[in-house]
Image (cartoon, rainbow over all chains, first blue to last red; front, side, top):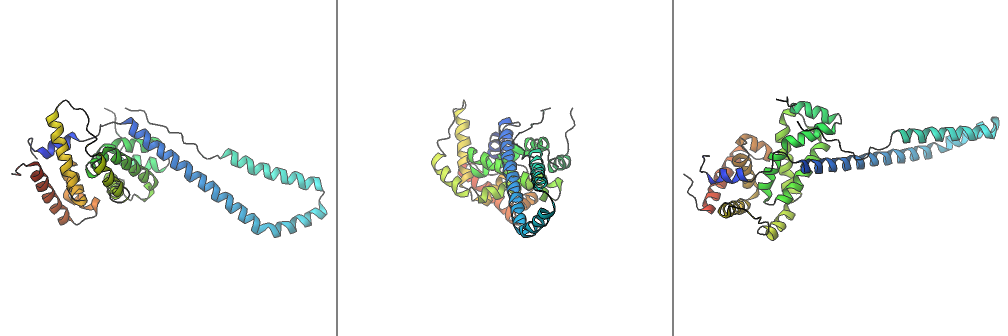
Length: 108
Length: 177
């Protein structure tokens, strides 16, 4: 294509800017939203699996609780349940889904 | 002169979760990808929206990229599939409605008219032909690379470019010597 080629002139004229911060920010924002959705879905799936697992294990847990209930005093069982629940909640609080924070690189 | 990280380094960092690395990939390739989509779609707003989806899809599927050396052609391949599939109907409808409403004030009216005539001419080409022309004549890709990106046989791409160029010249009333 030579200098007088109208196609070359057309293609050269119709191009985006070399650097477009707004475009980059829009892409990174959509990525952050996608990541958040994926992580929330993963958490939801994990929670559902935990519920299903507990439901499946409940007969065995009931038998265990019944057996322990006969030999252990009630307050100890209550404290154990509260501690277990607190540990689970602590784990979830320490690993929250990442919020859509975008860290853009410094331009050279 | 600041050393630019290679595509392989950026891909590896992005795969390990670096937003900054992926943002560098966007910076590096947004221009050619958007230029290609502008030409294929004929509408800059639609094309930019698809371009955002291209990079979003690339981020999602980055693990499936076999060779970082193919990053650019992989992005173009995603762009072509997006443009062809997801937005075809919307783009066509919008082209009909807004093709002549996108006029922006320009200092050189003759250049603007010529540009619009070329844009109009490009949009009139069949999609495969338009994409071949946009890649090879507009983006500087080789025929073989364009064939790989578009998933078309090499001979078809060559034929598309010959016919597309001739058609554009014909529409413009310019002899293709």
